[in-house]
Image 1 (tube, rainbow, N blue to C red):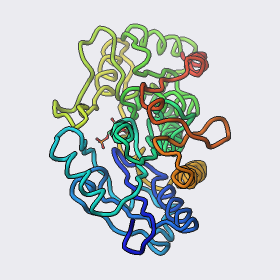
Image 2 (cartoon, helix red, strand yellow):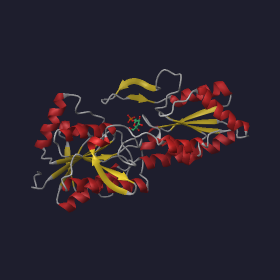
Image 3 (tube, rainbow, N blue to C red):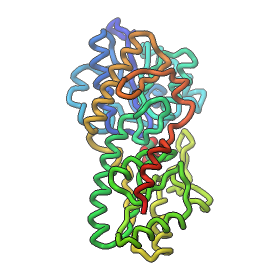
Image 4 (cartoon, rainbow, N blue to C red):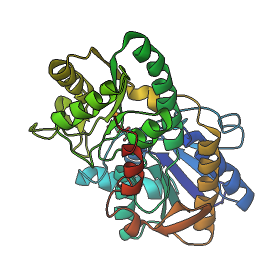
Length: 348
Ligand code: F6P
């Protein structure tokens, strides 16, 4: 219960940021206000609950944030369940700050923590977020559509320079465990070959695809590779360094360079690499992500109001609905094989 005698909903954003987070925050605050709740913004993901850093969010605080990228609350990859002391601090702070319930906006890691807390009886509702679109239980996460539109525009731009110089352009995109961004962005941009974690390929197969294209007179090509792609025959994932985050993830990056070197060595085609990196996560959300984020935010508050906690909001077809957090976080959502088959029709 907050100091005003109203029930208080805590809200946090965890993991990698993505466009549309502010749309969710705004919708939560507006809907909560309408239903008579106070909203408390928790700073920097789970870290804010461990440290007890929160600020009340009123209508003024969320005014004008709908088109803004990032998150006004800040984010972190803190795992509060890794250390017993952090977990204790989090539970004490929930009580001390008078938070009756919690809305956790995040991907597999943030929602994994939410699921564990829900199991222990905390009133938690999850909102699925990630540009990677790999959260099981929802047809789409917000942020993905914006990332895909950025990748598509980049591929369009790379096409014209690739054609002028008769080069192979390798585009490295995000996608740690799954290749959703690569496949959907690649399909939209007309990629000639798409490499994703779900479908290991060896370098000969890749070069064959490019040679086929050359043999029909197209002397330039676009290869899209997800950062989590593993080249068949190579021992490991390509990483920037060996550091792990609190959820045990390595810092991926560099597979584009490896592929490009191999292609040039084997085919003799001049090859260049573009790593899109965090550009895919920055900036203003698309209309789709603003609307999806808004609908998720409203639904999350409604679930708390109805007492349907321990759940995650989700998109099924065109409808916003919910599923138990326990069902959502059991596995990752991999690229639909049918979608990949469609993309493969355009290889070479
Ligand atoms: O979690 C989404 C994601 O975009 C992954 O695809 C990527 O590996 C990761 O974020 C990189 O995030 P950061 O550089 O913030 O650790």
